[in-house]
Image (cartoon, rainbow, N blue to C red; front, side, top):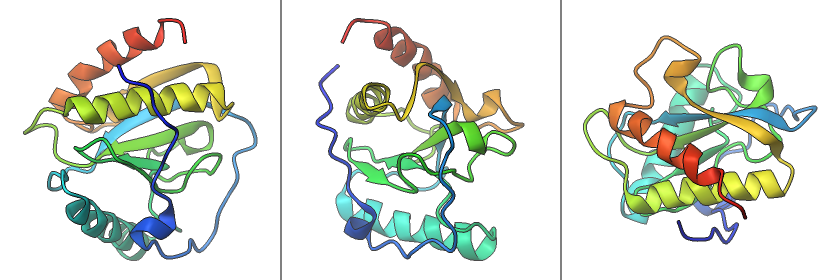
Length: 172
């Protein structure tokens, strides 16, 4: 796996609207929950930007969330986008939001395979989060289906998570 530079496209980079409310986490997250957007694949930045705006609009106006639900989103080209960001309570997994970070892969991974670039970005984001204290060193990585009745994050992405977990066991 490649190193992660820690660069995340900020909310301003995709023209996010301000959240209605922003609730800070009280302690570092103990769980990272991986999702998929179940929408179209995003490999080009223009596709990602339009999907981010669409998701935030849907979450805020149709679902009544205070902001986009995820803390981070990852596109097929491996670009990481800030959703709610570090240390902010998300709205991505009922009953698990106050002690978790939600990371969504942009696409439908029942139908497609996650790219190497997107999995590398996940690995790097997890390492960065660990080293910077955003979640516990002994955090648990799960798919959304592990904490809720859903097919999310899709079969192909879910089956890739054990390899990511294994790679996280290697020394920094």
